[in-house]
Image 1 (cartoon, rainbow, N blue to C red):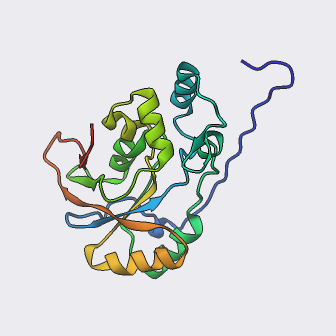
Image 2: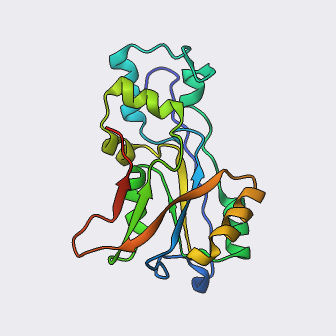
Length: 202
């Protein structure tokens, strides 16, 4: 509910691409490498649950979390990857891109995969940022639900041919990204879930 001088500010941007340059996931194949790009925090997603956790737990927004106020960790500006990704697309081969927004890894990755493919993700390949550990602990959120609600430290996932893995990683790191191999593409049986999370902690 809005009261008094309350207001909501929203914005958006659009882009154009030549039809023959659209990356739609149709080139994804078994054996492809998945590369993750680090997020800066929740990235404007999951805030209904975040607000509920803060309210129920009576959390103080100025409490220290990994050397910064909780409020700063929760409100860190969303990372924008466009410059790094355009450089990668220009200099290497990209088969699919999955922006990890609302719905987390579990709901966003399948949108760019053929029905016959699944993403096998190693959740131990990166350290989950403190803000997500805090949310999981304070909200008593199950591990799988964390990956369905939040980006959990991964703001973008890039699918590249296995033979382009090292080239892609170097391009991304040279562009200033924190990038690492997060998983690979495997064959999916009919009706099988298209994201397999390995290494989950309860």
